[in-house]
Picture (tube, rainbow, N blue to C red):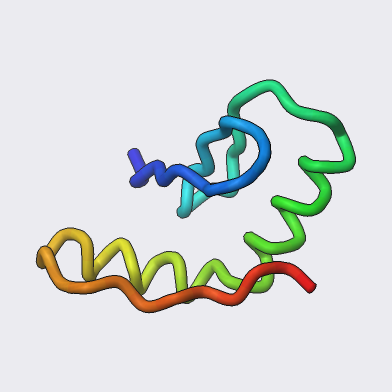
Length: 65
Protein backbone atom coordinates (compact mmCIF):
# COMPACT_ATOMS: atom_id res chain seq x y z
CA UNK A 1 0.00 0.00 0.00
CA UNK A 2 1.26 3.46 -0.84
CA UNK A 3 1.71 6.48 1.31
CA UNK A 4 -1.21 8.92 1.60
CA UNK A 5 -0.60 12.62 2.02
CA UNK A 6 -2.83 15.51 2.88
CA UNK A 7 -3.15 18.24 0.32
CA UNK A 8 -3.71 21.77 1.59
CA UNK A 9 -6.72 23.16 -0.21
CA UNK A 10 -10.18 24.54 0.43
CA UNK A 11 -11.43 20.97 0.87
CA UNK A 12 -10.32 18.06 3.04
CA UNK A 13 -9.02 15.27 0.86
CA UNK A 14 -6.44 12.49 0.89
CA UNK A 15 -4.27 11.68 -2.13
CA UNK A 16 -2.53 8.32 -2.55
CA UNK A 17 0.84 9.29 -4.05
CA UNK A 18 1.58 6.06 -5.90
CA UNK A 19 -1.88 5.52 -7.41
CA UNK A 20 -3.43 8.98 -7.58
CA UNK A 21 -6.52 7.76 -5.72
CA UNK A 22 -8.26 10.70 -4.07
CA UNK A 23 -10.76 10.35 -1.21
CA UNK A 24 -12.91 13.04 0.30
CA UNK A 25 -15.94 15.12 -0.58
CA UNK A 26 -15.39 18.08 -2.86
CA UNK A 27 -16.66 19.47 -6.18
CA UNK A 28 -15.75 17.83 -9.50
CA UNK A 29 -13.92 21.00 -10.55
CA UNK A 30 -11.68 20.69 -7.48
CA UNK A 31 -11.01 17.03 -8.28
CA UNK A 32 -9.94 17.98 -11.80
CA UNK A 33 -7.52 20.58 -10.43
CA UNK A 34 -6.08 18.18 -7.84
CA UNK A 35 -5.52 15.46 -10.43
CA UNK A 36 -3.89 17.92 -12.83
CA UNK A 37 -1.55 19.16 -10.07
CA UNK A 38 -0.80 15.56 -9.04
CA UNK A 39 0.06 14.51 -12.60
CA UNK A 40 2.46 17.46 -12.94
CA UNK A 41 4.19 16.86 -9.60
CA UNK A 42 4.02 13.12 -8.87
CA UNK A 43 7.81 12.79 -8.94
CA UNK A 44 8.25 15.67 -6.52
CA UNK A 45 5.61 14.17 -4.21
CA UNK A 46 7.50 10.86 -4.18
CA UNK A 47 10.77 12.66 -3.43
CA UNK A 48 9.13 14.50 -0.54
CA UNK A 49 7.70 11.27 0.83
CA UNK A 50 11.23 9.79 0.92
CA UNK A 51 12.35 12.91 2.83
CA UNK A 52 9.48 12.42 5.30
CA UNK A 53 10.63 8.86 5.94
CA UNK A 54 14.15 10.16 6.68
CA UNK A 55 12.72 12.99 8.81
CA UNK A 56 14.35 15.57 6.57
CA UNK A 57 12.91 18.95 5.51
CA UNK A 58 10.48 18.88 2.60
CA UNK A 59 10.96 20.72 -0.68
CA UNK A 60 8.27 23.19 -1.75
CA UNK A 61 6.06 22.13 -4.64
CA UNK A 62 4.59 24.81 -6.90
CA UNK A 63 0.82 25.28 -6.83
CA UNK A 64 -1.30 24.85 -9.92
CA UNK A 65 -1.28 28.05 -11.96
